[in-house]
Length: 151
Image (cartoon, rainbow, N blue to C red):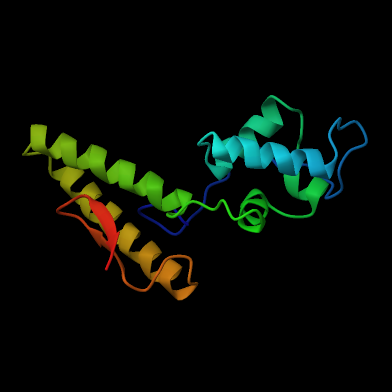
């Protein structure tokens, strides 16, 4: 998604490899990388953490170039997709941290605005994931209980 306050996406961050093909110097083949992805997911790593680990520790610059599919597609194929998507989990953590901060600092109006923006972003994502059937239609985010549930 875009930035919180604007629709811009920003330019900084690591740059993708120029070629869409896997380099010849990679030590692992596609099957081994798929098994590594499954193993790391079972250890509790998120999809982005898996990609970073494979890049930094295992020397795999692009999983999609090597395997022909993304990390989330590999997890979906092996039926080990997390119940809640990773971006929503990160927003839940941010929401909880802001809520805790506001309880300690009741007059922090900027944080209250940030909490409202975060909650609205969560609701937009929920609507999108319901539309794409990534989460069930009965799934709801409860800000008061700071959790989610499916009725």
